[in-house]
Image (cartoon, rainbow, N blue to C red; front, side, top):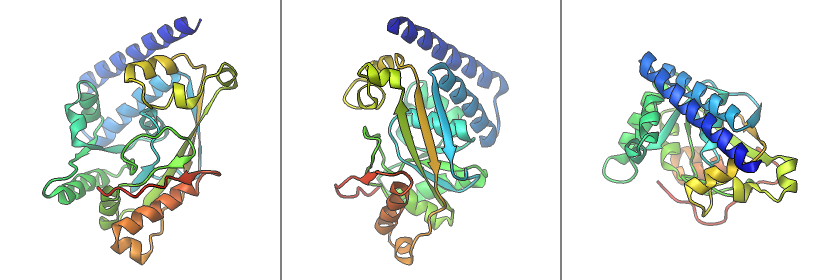
Amino acid sequence: MSVLRKLYRLVLCIWDFAYSIAEVLITRPKTRAGRAAWLRKLCMRVMRSVDITYETRGTIPTHGAVISNHLMFFDIFLHSSVNPVVFISKAELRQTPLLGWISMMAGTVYVSRGGGGSAAKAAEGMGKGFRDGLPVVFFPEGTTGIDNNVVMNFRSGLLAQAIMLDQPVTPVFIHYDISPIDAAAGKSLEHDFFWGPQKLGQLIWDFLGLHEIHATVVFGDPIQFSAEGIANRKVAAEEAREAMVALWPGVRKATTATVIL
C-alpha cells in the first residue's frame, strides 16, 4: 500500500506541474502579482496532492519583508499557499533546469552573493519586489535545517537591505507535525521529510509515503529594531533571530557564529 500511495501521489504531482506549466504558457501573466498568483495555485495543488495541511496564526502581512525559518522546500509551497508573495533567491537558481524556469515565471527576484557591488544589486533586486506591493519572502538562515526546534544563524545581508529600504520586517516560524499513524510506524520528520544527508530523489520518495503532514505557520509582529540594530547588521540579525525564536515554545538558537552575507 505504501508503494501504491507513493506512485499515486507522484502521478498527481506530475499532473499538477504539467497542468500549471501549460496554464502559465497560455496565460503569460505580465505582472509580478499575476505570476505570484499563478505560483500560489500551483503550490496549493501540490499541497493537496501530497496531503500537506496548514493553519496560520497571527496577522498575515500584505507588504514589506517576511523572514522565515527554513526546513525544506515545502516552506516555499506554504508561503505561496498562504498568500501571494515574491521570493528572493540566489542568482544560481535561475540556471537550474525546470526549477529555474518555474522560479522565473513566478516572479522571483534574484540576487548575487559576494563579489563587487553585491549589496547594491541586492538592494536593487529587493526594491523591485517591494515596489510591486507584495510581501517579499526570504530565508535568512541561508540553508535548510533538520530540526523543528532550532533556528540557525542568520545571514545579515538581505535583512540589512530591507532595513535600509525602510521596509517592515515580519518574522515567521514554520512548525511541522507528522501524523500519529506515521509516528506509530516509526516514521519521523528528520528521516522522512526534512532534507538531511539523503539524496533529493530519496527524500521525495520517502515523504510521498507519509499519510499527512500538518504545518503551523506563525506570523509575528513587525520587528522593532534597536538603534544599534539599524546601524549594525550583525546586531539586526541577532534581534531578528530572537524575534523568530519567540514565536514558538521550546525553540532554541544554534550556537555557532553568525554567518555574514
